[in-house]
Image 1: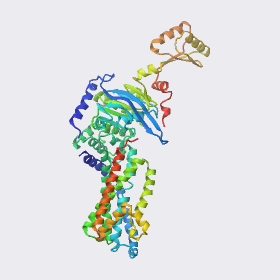
Image 2 (image 1 turned 60 degrees about the vertical axis):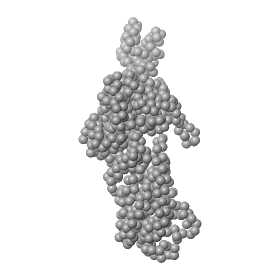
Image 3 (image 1 turned 30 degrees about the vertical axis):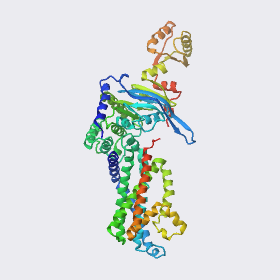
Image 4 (image 1 turned 135 degrees about the vertical axis):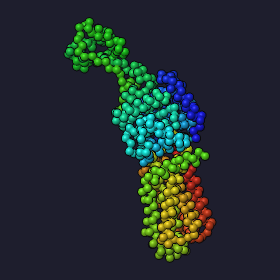
Length: 348
Length: 252
C-alpha cells in the first residue's frame, strides 16, 4: 500500500518547484551524494574501481544532464542512485532518504526509465500501466485511472488496449516514461531517452520532458550521449570521467569556462591572411591565429564584446574583410577540452 | 502480507502473458504423451523381467512420468526469464518496492499451475491407456508433481539469474538433468540396477520421489509416499531460498 505520507511528501517536493523557484539552483537538494564508490571484482581476481568517489548535488525542479564517455562510471553511478547496485562506500540521500539504509523508501519516490525500456511486447499498454502502479501498492481502480491520465498527458490516447509490440519507437518510449511516472515520483531517472528515435519523435519527447519539469515540477536526472540533447534540454550538466565528476555547471557556463568563442575571417588572398595573422599576434587581439589558405581562425573569448575592437583595428590597417563568422563553442568542444575525448567516439 | 500480494500480482501478469501464447503450453504437454504412447507399450514385456516391481506396468510407469514432467516441464523456464531480463522487465520491477521474493514466486506459481494442468492431461491419457488407481492416488500424485515442478522452476530461475546467458544455462541443465533422470528410475525401475548404480540412485532425491509416487499408485507403503512428499517439499524450500537470494543480488 502506498501510504498517505508518501503522497504528501511527494507533494512537498513538487511544491517549491511548481512555484518556479527551482530552475536556478534554488530548490531543495533532492539528490546529495558524497564519495560514492563502487568496485567490481574482475575476472582475473583483482578489483576494478568503476566509480572512484562521486560527489554530486541535484536540486528539486532541475533537469540535470549526466554525461560521460563509456566506461567513465556513468551507468554504475546511475545504477547506484536508483538502488540497483549497492555502493561499496559513500553516502547518498535521495528525496530525503538514505540510499544505503532505506532503499525501499527511495524506490517509492523515484521513477526509473532504462535505456531499452522494460515492457513485454505481448502485453497490452493498459495492463503494463496497471500492473506497474499496483507494484507500487496502488489499488486497481486508482491504477487504471492514473494510467489513463498518463496516456493522455503523453499523447498516447487510445493506446490502452493496444499490444506494446504494435507501438512505434516514439510511442514505446513515451509508454516507458509513463511507466516511470505511475506513482507520481518527484524524481525521474531517464537513461538515454531518445536513443534510436527519429528527429521528429526526439523533439516531441524533449517537449514532454520539459513539460514534466515545468508543469509538474519534477526533477529529471538524464543520462545522454547526445550533446545537443544536453544543450537543448538541461538546466545543468554533470560530466563524469574516470569514475569521478570532473565538471558541473549550466551549458553556458561550461562553454565559457572550457572553450571560448572562435572567430573566422575570410580575406582576399593568402598574403593578406598572413598579414592579418601577424597583426593579431603582435597586438594580442586574440589567441594564436591559425591560417588555412585565405581564412584565419582565432580564439576570441567573449567575442560579442571584443569583436568591434578587432574589426576597428583591421580597418585602421586598411584590411578588407570578405567574410566574418563567430562560432560559439559547443558542448562537444567542452567535452573534448575536459576529457581529451569526443563523446561519440566512445560509443559501441 | 506484502510478499503474498506481490506474488499474486506477478503471477497474474505472467499467467496472462503465457495464455496469450497457448501454443507453448501445448508443446510442453506433448513430451509426456509421446513417452506414454511410444515407450509405455514396451513395458508390457519388460515388466515380466525379474526385479521389476509387481503390479500393472502402467501403475509403475505413469507415476514415473509424472515426476519426469515435473522436471522437464519446468527446468527450461529460466530461458523465459533471460528474455525478460534482456527486455528490461526484471530491472524495471527491481526499481519498484516489490518484494524480491515475489518476483520469482509469482513466476513459479505460473509454472506450477501449467505443469499441474499438463499432469491432469497426462493422467487422463494414462487412464485411457489402462491405468487404474484410487482417486486419491491421482490427487496426491498431482501434489507431488506440483512440488517437483516448483523446485525445478526455482532452480531454473536461480541458474538463469546467476549465470546470465542462454548458452551457459543450457549446458548446465543438460549436464545435470540427464543423470538426474537416469538415476531416478523413471524409465526403468532402479530395482533392476546393479548395486553400485542403486547406491548412486540413493543420493538422488528424485529417485525417492519416484519410489513414493509408485508406491502411491501400486497401493504400497504410505511411508514411502510421505518420504516422497517430504523430499519434494525440502527441495522446494532449498531451491526457493536460492532463487530468492539470486533475485536479491545486485544486478551487476
